[in-house]
Image (cartoon, rainbow, N blue to C red; front, side, top):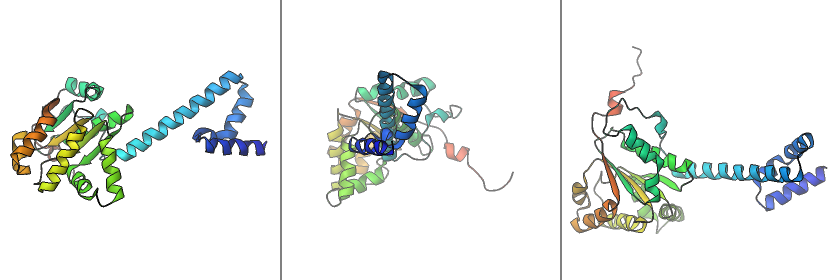
Length: 250
């Protein structure tokens, strides 16, 4: 019996049947108790294997997404008025716009929930099976700068190119060098009408030209981003400041 189990595990490893490899003894033991038909046993085994692969794929995509700590929009505080309604958020969470290659811009002052909303939509997309990633503009610039020099940066860049939904946090916060701005434009141009992009920014599109220091490049960038795009303007005081924590007892 043990030799047969070992053979099954060996074949399962060759075929990359992770569930069967890990639980061959339990599976056979349970079958001896339940006595399913050959058809039921085969169906159950295949179902378990598919579920295991789906779970593994989900966890891999979740890890690769690089989400910030707060990213579950089920905890969204609608008592904090910032310019987005329950209905609008519900529509965004349905992700129909991703299938249509629409973009979303969350624009507003610091602390109004831009990052939380962007990360939450990426999390929702991952749960629905999309290839989705979250990256800050600072990290993106580093990837763009290093992709010709290191394999890790090139690998990350290629993953971004293959994404179905990409969130870029805090763009245009700091001035960019000419080569960085061109590389950023090339990324957006490659994603244009193939993927959806979420952008968070505290600057209006008109101010992007000042940050890029290139009106022509800014115009070309905006042309691609805004072609099919929903701009959500957020306002109000900073949520973090209104809900500031203290180390002292009341």
